[in-house]
Image (cartoon, rainbow, N blue to C red; front, side, top):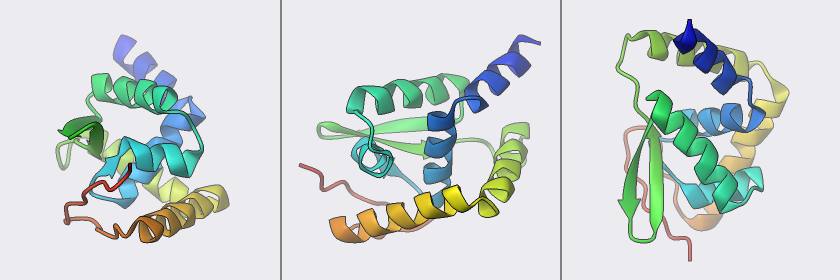
Length: 125
């Protein structure tokens, strides 16, 4: 039961839901991308990403001073099915679509347009 409670607690936070949605859009995102798109501080972004990391939903990779994150659930796993279900909900949610558009605008402005399957490199300064 504790695992179920942790799952619902993690999904009960709007910031974590938005971070998951952003990570579903790109193969990998720098913490600076998440900060910019969500308009949150580095400490808030990192705190929520750590929570998702400890749940086993994301992995991290250091790139110089910045940390990059990606979804890391095994294909076909229960977590994968849960994320797919979330993705279906987000596809129909106007706020999620606006967030997706904001991410795309930010990525183009940064000159980083890598999509799923392509590795992106952070150019934040």
